[in-house]
Image (tube, rainbow, N blue to C red):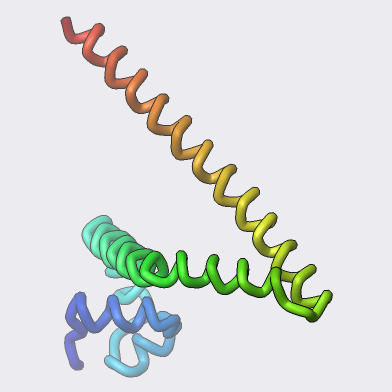
Length: 124
């Protein structure tokens, strides 16, 4: 019976491999895989890795965001009416979505600040 490391299990889970397939490949029971996957330590490791992947992806996307907006803006000057319409719709959709997200983040920040002030008041 081959032992599967946390890293190997993490890669398998993140790649979408089923617990049955992982168990078969390592000649381990599905129950063993399930216990490991649902353990607090593994769940924490999985969450941390996913968070790191999202952070890295967002960093990469941010590098190209302004250029992408410039590209959409330049399409507005196109002679193709359909392309102009699609670019305008996208710009407005993105503006609405990002404005909403920005407002939510601002509200969350304000709520955290209020919660911290309330916690400080309680502990005085």
